[in-house]
Length: 471
Ligand SMILES: *Cc1c(COP(=O)(O)O)cnc(C)c1O
Image: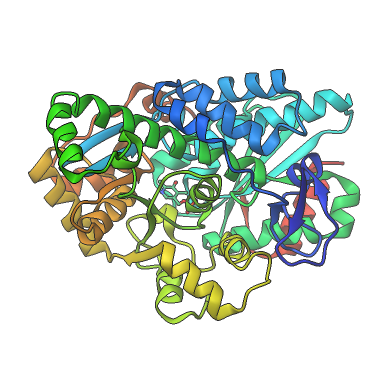
């Protein structure tokens, strides 16, 4: 498989290059040249398949040409050492719980996959030179990437994070690891961290000096694997509904007979499924949209935002106007210029073949938006807890509320619960007046000692630092 750049001015890359470079030479994002539709038989079998096997099928469609299939299977199985279950929260609304991995957020999936894929390439090449992963984080990326790569030989990870803008619990997940992980505390906001990383990749002198690669959600090895759990979620829902309806099957058969239509069970279940993704840099929803292009039976999508509503505004107006991010309760979604917007445009404009207006039309036909203030997020968390007993984290709360507000009669919605509420314990406890239990794997991080390198947001300083440590 070849990967092209969304900016259209860089040469095509193979998977290895796309993974190592992260960003194309023209600062565009890599896109797979083709998105294979998965065969009908796969969708029919899906409800009975295990998560790992569903994921291996999806992974093969993307990476099967470039990675030995046995190795790919190992990478997938090893990545998915935990489940991504769906849980019914209330009538017609399900939570896709993406927080059962090592750092309790969905980014574990992409980060673990990427670390293992990069290691595969390094081994294949017998590479001598160390690979340096640079990653900017607004909270959860850093911990997922640091833990995904922890102890992986031949790779050093630098995590850049905005000083004072990530929760103490998030911070300890990447500042206490040591080994091949270095945390860099930047005096600025997330967008400054991202700008430092982007500038480093573009800097000729630095790239001559050391081998640099990105692990942000822009990396194809991080964002594509996130499609795995959307397929699994649909499979689990189908299975649940099939068994729920076994009792009602007789009625259903009667109805079908009465309707005079032999509707298959499959099409009976699926036409009304809505997938709702709390979004910041739009990598997670982008992988769901790729899944849709592969045939994932989802009727439409909702991108749920906090007060950073750039995408929401784009849906309303057709104009994309990035601006500085504002700080919110759902801080992993505080992004003012979501990188993966370019991929969404590229996907629905068919690589810039369609006009802006036609592209916008296609996007609004499939995706709607929602935006919530901190006050609304708090209200949602309280209401959901009072009504159902389910504890939402501030990010998942945006997704849940967008379904409550946006589901049409007869539709079933799945929202991503993108992180465990204990990751935002101070906030969640205060909002709900409870004492959220901290899972053991999270408590373990909090016992470690914080180590980080202070840094300004000036690229000169960051560059000087990198040149000094890697010499
Ligand atoms: C990263 C993150 C998001 C946003 O995901 P994107 O892929 O950047 O849109 C949402 N919630 C949590 C908890 C996150 O860590």
